[in-house]
Image 1: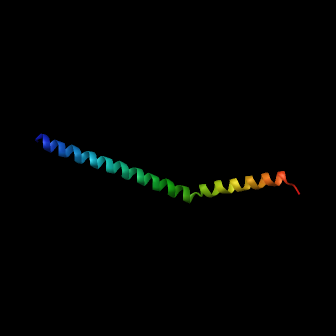
Image 2: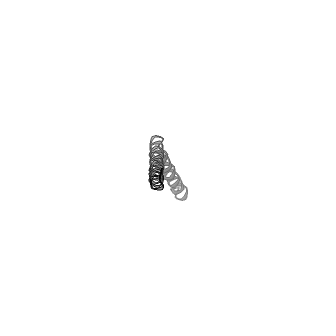
Image 3: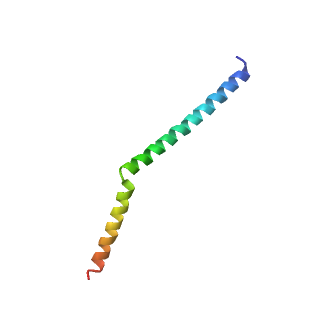
Length: 63
């Protein structure tokens, strides 16, 4: 093969590997978001925060 063909082949492989890497990161992000939604992690954190703030208000103002 000539140098031009090797250059084209190398460029194509580089483009393919970069696009595959971006695709894998995108899939991982979607899976993480789906897992957080399914396990209600964000909802639980919000609930804990609201319970703690409510309890601290009750202790500071018992009446």
